[in-house]
Image 1 (cartoon, helix red, strand yellow):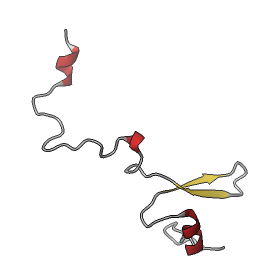
Image 2 (tube, rainbow, N blue to C red):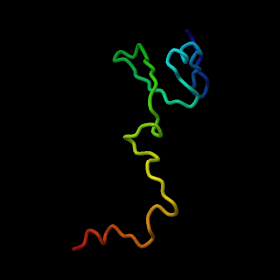
Image 3 (cartoon, helix red, strand yellow):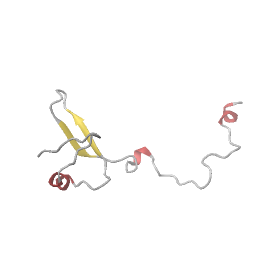
Image 4 (cartoon, helix red, strand yellow):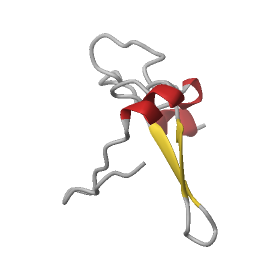
Amino acid sequence: MFSTLTSKGQVTIPQSLRQQLGLMPGQAVAFDLSADAACITMRPAASAKQAPEQGFGMVKVKGGHVPADWDVARLLKP
């Protein structure tokens, strides 16, 4: 399979490969380069929004994220 690199550095992944990997639009992919730089390996990956260890979006906050009167320096003083 072949694809052409665009001027923006983008490559279209052929449809048959997307289907084999189960890739969906907007899904993150990871690229790995072999030690001799002869081969690029691509695999599906969890995006920051999908990876629970990143904690992204786990806490919903209404209003300001930090209260205006909260000062971390006061917690450090005896």
